[in-house]
View 1: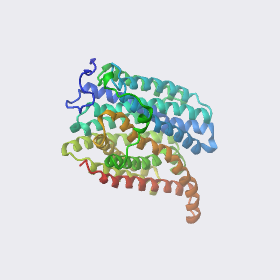
View 2: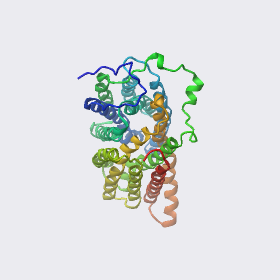
View 3: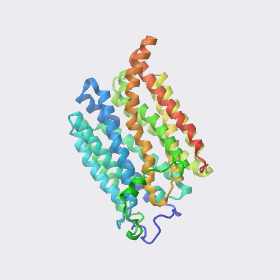
View 4: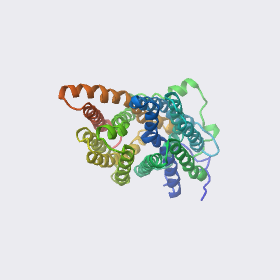
Amino acid sequence: MTSTPLAADRDPLAEPMQRVPARWTFAFSLATVGVFVGWYGPLQILLARQAETVSPGHKEAVLGLVAGVGAAFSLVANPLWGALSDRTTSRYGRRIPWVLGGATAGAVSLLLLGSATSIATMIVGWCLVQVALNAPFAALSAAIPDQVPVADRGAGGAWFGVAQTVGVMAGTGLATLAGGVLAGYLACAVVVLAGCLPYVLLRRDRVLAPDRRPAFDLRTFLRGFWLSPRAYPDFAWAWATRFLINLGNAIALLYLFFFLKYAVRLPDPETGVFLLTALNALTLLATVTLGGYWSDRIGKRRVFVCWAGVLMSVAAFLLAGWQTWPGAVLAAVVLGIGFGTYTSVDFALVTQVLPAAADRAKDLGVINVANTLPQVLAPVVAAPLVAGAGAWLASLAGADRVTTGYAALYLVSGLVGLLGAVLVYRIKSVA
């Protein structure tokens, strides 16, 4: 069933009061699934395979370089696309053009990345994918505060989290089962493009009239990306909490493929990554909706974010101290429980500390820097821990360098995430 755009004379900046229909939630979730398939098929499997082919002796460094440079581009693209979507006056709405355009460009970029045969072309391809897919992600993130009432934000964040998890699992599955690197990229590209179409065709979006758009001034536009921690302390603490928890998670996940292959010595690490991702997704799906709806019911956010962060740190500590397949399985379950709750409730919390309704997508883009900046920093932190700290600790303890390197990696991951979990209580305007 096709809807019409939300009326142009309705205030696009007002807080939404009516619940969204189920068909919107479904289409929104499907579009989000597509974006995350496009990201995590490469991140979980395909980029690692390409790195091994391009430079077998330096695969960890190549993967870290490609992921880090791509994340740097993502760091800029997300708030930029968000700010531009805030100013969009299309008759189809502020967000829909960016969902369709970004998904189309993302699908083409994935095909280009799939044909990469050198480190340079891998970097260029992955940067294009990151820049393109951040357009629909920024627009979809802003669609929740645009259209979902505050009292339902936990549930809205839950569906957002479910869709992301399904996307991660589907992307990993497609990359594993497609039958080759190029076939994996082709499958991911098709899902990215197909996933956004129901959302676009539904045409439910808030329309900004041209006379409501402020005049463009480059200096003011650029200055808008800086939100003073002194003026908006709760926004700043929400950013810091998300940054630390995501940094811990990024450090843990970056080398999962190599951890299973060289520390756990799993004969088939690709299948191992897929099974852990699926197991993590199943436990996450069980808690993401429960956490979101429960948070809405009792009207509290911080306690859920804190304990979710603690559980995620416990998962990292398990990988540090128990480097076996059963240990990895248990860690995946614990991480799924924690990350599920965190995904839904933290998003709801963030939407309640946004400074201005007119800049929702831009401000969420600034918040999303706390998701992407850890991807830039994770290789910088992780590579020295696995190589340098591993060799140093091995010389002290007479242990295996690989074992001690990954122990140091996951210990640091857990401590960073734990700090982020505690800092959520610095936020004062949200219960």
